[in-house]
Length: 279
Ligand SMILES: C[S@@+](CC[C@H](N)C(=O)[O-])C[C@H]1O[C@@H](n2cnc3c(N)ncnc32)[C@H](O)[C@@H]1O
Image (cartoon, rainbow, N blue to C red; front, side, top):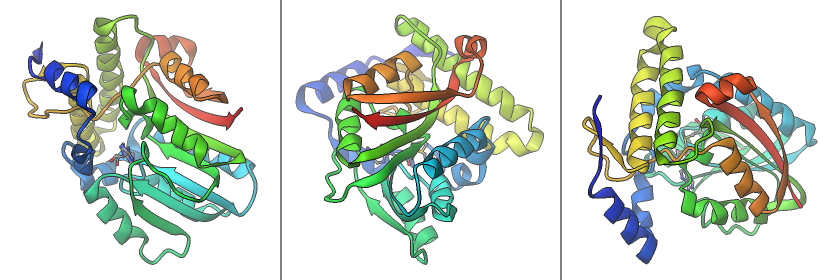
């Protein structure tokens, strides 16, 4: 696949930086490049997803009983259903910015006495309640770098003083410049696609959505795959070092569980789970 530098993307980024991003683009944040039904039916087979969910559930349940939880970037509800079925949770507010995702979430949880689905922007969210747990699954990499500081500030603001932030996501291997970051993105998505291929026919849907996610990541980096018409990226993965610096800047102390060895992380990246406390 030939990928060339987009000429129009840097201009769009410049406009966004100077005037602030037009946040209406977020109303189709994921659905403009990922078919949601296919995402919902396949994503739990993504390499490492179930392991990540288990670790998140464990860390959440260790926090106590009757927990009030805020989930950000709930998507189609894959992690929300985990929160709903956990005996340690009392109330779950699931925030999602994408109109089509929120429609799916509302129909999935309309009968639920535990889960409320709210259309909202996690970067701007300003609720009056404080939570025992704020959490996100596979959603940190949807937050743009320029928004990460505000986003983590909102996470912090919505935690009770003894509250806990728990998130699981994919992280790129280390990079020192744009070319290395591009190579890191290719290495990670290549690995995930190879793992999906190993599932045989069961991996076909996953290969399709992972390829779309990869292309959106390339667009976010300023490259344009021939196959895409995306004007904006959607996948803003960073390295462990970059993410952890953002956590420190937002005054969190944290513990990380990396699902791969150091060697594997340096080759291809890794899924990690974090638990973080406001200092
Ligand atoms: C890859 S999906 C993950 C969905 C789900 N948590 C899961 O485990 O499958 C990331 C979700 O984050 C949402 N998202 C991105 N930016 C957001 C924001 N600023 N506020 C709320 N949701 C956001 C996207 O619309 C998308 O549905």
